Image (cartoon, rainbow, N blue to C red):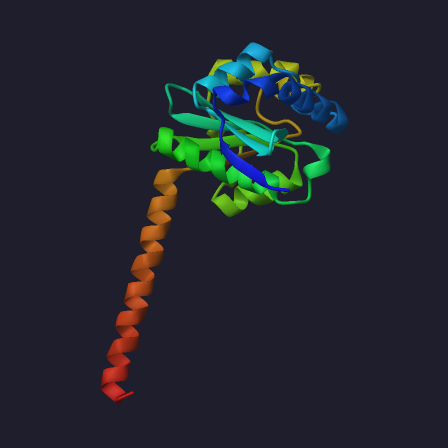
Length: 204
């Protein structure tokens, strides 16, 4: 077995129906999540270079695509799916990392966000630098929230005036992450400076 994870291209259009079937079935099993997209929608993500696919030779293994919202201010990684027989092998983590890298490359200044009910996805997102946030901090693009209408729990979102649902909102803010890293580097440099000072003072 050799599972390859890559940016999807026209050679992978043959998997569109399988991908949609897998997304649809997973949503039904969880009792939550976005339902089936059109085959044309998935195909467009593939041909526009906005999808990640995992394959085992000529067999479809997993998939994820990226969407931009609010004039590219926000980017979401959506439709993450791994076929049941390939779960527990770290494939989802590899797909999410590839989707994250693709999003950062194509939309370097955008905030990356997602909605999920899955504990495993939350762990992966946290490792990538995402933080849980209220829905108010996510995109206000109506087209994004309209996509939630196909979820079986959309009535919950409506009853709470679009402020909460069963999903957890998570966001990666590149500006915030950069500031945090700069502060951490400054703290390390200051600690090293103090250590060097005391070493010289006491000859150690």
